[in-house]
Amino acid sequence: MEEKGLLAKELLENVFRLFSALPNAKLVKLSRKAYSEIANDSDWHRTRVGYFGYEEVILLKGADKEWALALGHACGAYPADPFSADLSAVPMETNGKDEDLEEAVSHALSIGYFYNSLIFALASGELVVKPDHCSRFKDTILRNSRFSFQDFVAQELVMDPTVMTGDLRPFVTKPRLYKPQSAQTLFEVLKRTLEI
Image (cartoon, rainbow, N blue to C red; front, side):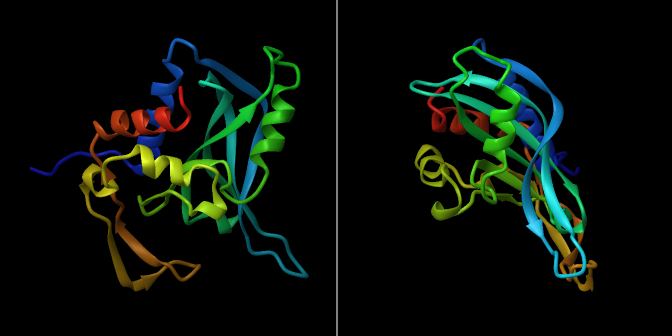
């Protein structure tokens, strides 16, 4: 019997839901989508940009910071095709004022490729934590985790190297799937990372 699993973006969506259920969490729907650029294949005669788009954030109080946690989904032009979703966190200084929240979140999310990403998912199902110089969280996440992402896997990634996508990636015949209980483990790691 084949084990059922979650797509990588479903795993991140479940983690986001767990954060939204915390007693100190405040879910805020953005009046307009915020974007973070993740890929760009523009040149002198055309513009093709891929983004993560964010429609809502969760405000969370940490030990010494307030965080806006956002779940992004890949959107925009074809350079976003290799990506699926991400969980980003940006420090906020709203002091309880919502009127400047959207502008602050939009601005903070737009800084640097993946800089605010806690973790992101590729369309293939792989989960990624960026290296130190690309993300504010990598060292903290790795320090707070006592697992391998491999522990989460319900179904391995299968690619057909003889068939290529339009951007020359091997065709994914089966995306990597994750065990449903992995959401709780990842939630605990990210909660420790943000000191919530």
